[in-house]
Image (cartoon, rainbow, N blue to C red; front, side):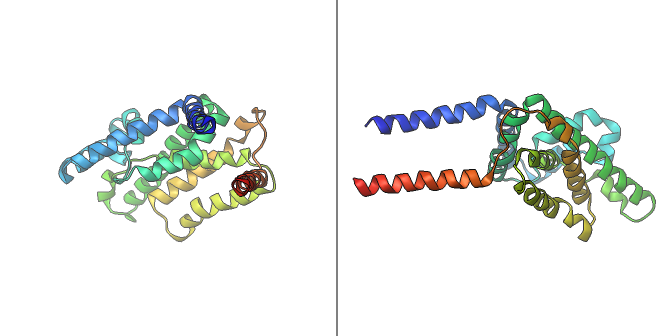
Length: 235
């Protein structure tokens, strides 16, 4: 009976510790949930209007850059929130806990701004030269993917060698290889964001905490599963 009481209590303490140590990520998730619910309640015409005004496209960056650079982070380009919950738990919560809130925001927001201006700047140049349609100046461009890409990249420095290089190779495949096969605003933005994240290595030097070794985690899981199996066999 005592174990049954302790387990929920321990789980609750663990969850609260994550929320308390990653406040920006957790509040952000709640806001994204609310705006996603709003998207589901809107007509297609209304949703198109709202997302158009929150997008970091060429038109809005010229009219009100500060507003759209911030507002675009609170809307998802799509109607599904749950996949982002998983990604935030895998990448953003551990990153904010490790980096601290200030460093976390600096890494992610600098990439969000930098990648937006690089990708939209290249698009504007393509439009002026006639290589892209002028209709693209008002495209929808909202979401958290640039922020997420930078944070995922900087997390490489949390991982112990040699697994760090495996992780970096994975990031390269996800964020850089698509740019080699198909040049789009989004692919350019993702590649820039990942590079900005990697470039923030100096910000990670001297951070407290041991580097994460995947093999240590695997061995710990094996020990836990082994102990659980033995306890069940002895009952």
